[in-house]
Image 1 (cartoon, rainbow, N blue to C red):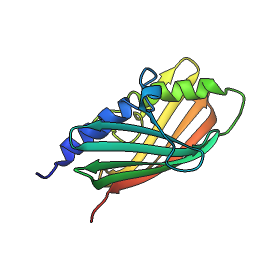
Image 2 (spheres, rainbow, N blue to C red):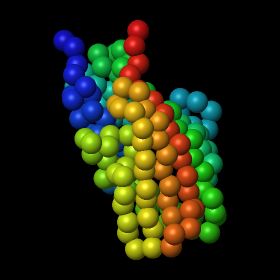
Image 3 (cartoon, rainbow, N blue to C red):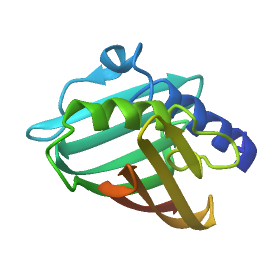
Image 4 (cartoon, rainbow, N blue to C red):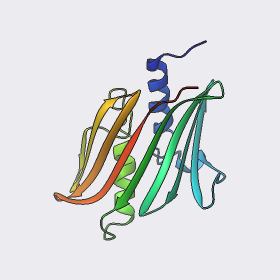
Length: 157
């Protein structure tokens, strides 16, 4: 059986909503570290498996990989950092809420725009699901306080 892009995108959105972006399921998704001092989040649905591994905290780097029937089919790498230490956990909590808005039209990170109180999330991407790059920013009262760049796409044998 081959997979369609639609099925793959649907799975990626489901996996993201059930790992980092899910406050309720975040701890449930945690796995044993696959690398020294890494944090690992996993999700599986049928023949699909998703694994997000990242290192660091206020400056961090990571990789998400999707396998279909044990074969890697899609991957995304990212690196991000806090631009200020003032907000601490508030930024992480806001980011979880923004990333929970991931959808079929923007399956990479969060939506194009999300605002809650004085925090604003902005995400821009070029390319399509098979080959893309993007950047997300969080602002507090219009001042940038967090940034992340990402890129990824289809993985082939």
